[in-house]
Length: 124
Image (cartoon, rainbow, N blue to C red; front, side):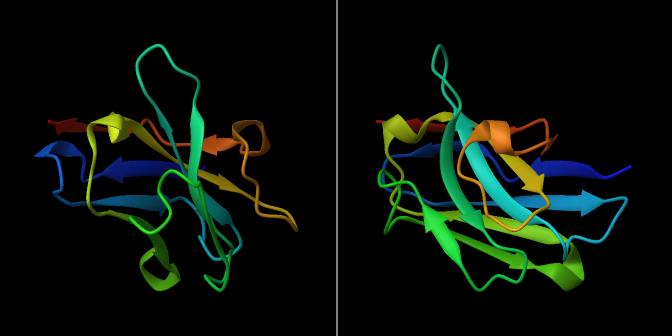
């Protein structure tokens, strides 16, 4: 059974950085497109970034473009999200998600495998 486990969240100040990790166990990561979503309190889960199965193509939400970077290491079964220049509005639980298929999805409903999330809190 494939499982996703996120780590790396924490409490930081505005302008600081974090590096989130998502480790996949129970199966090879190489066939999966991977994505990060986030959900702030009382808000809908929103797309942050995605990367295709090979790492050749990446997608970002406009709100994080230029500040966040998604990457993957298939040999280590790990996907990363580097968060730079963090802002208070980035505060949320960050979720890792995986999907098979031809297209890299950018909506939550396209992803069937999810981790439990890691909290990122940015103080002003």
